[in-house]
Length: 138
Image (cartoon, rainbow, N blue to C red; front, side, top):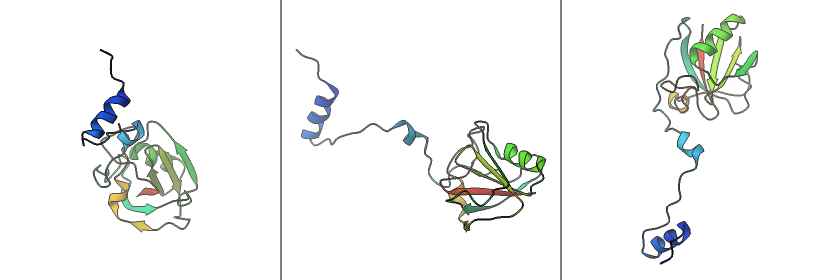
């Protein structure tokens, strides 16, 4: 008897009405459902979460920006504070932006859109979403 290849098993399953099951891609496993990750309301240096901002062009907070694999609201807010800014924003797990004004063409959106990606430095809290920037103020 010959061993069946994975393709033969999938084809046989499809012919039996079981359908094709395609394994998830690793990047799909990281995605979360909007609104499921809690937002940190206040950072340790007393910055407060203000709102979720639509930010497709990354032009909302342009005074200083950086990415970190240790990103958290505390890291973002403390970095922005040390540089003299009054706004801090998180997006896409690792991105932080700082500024004294909210620029660009973005606008406030529902909070759930900023509860999509877990922070790279603490997966129990949210660090924004796709094109969604969680804004903190001092």
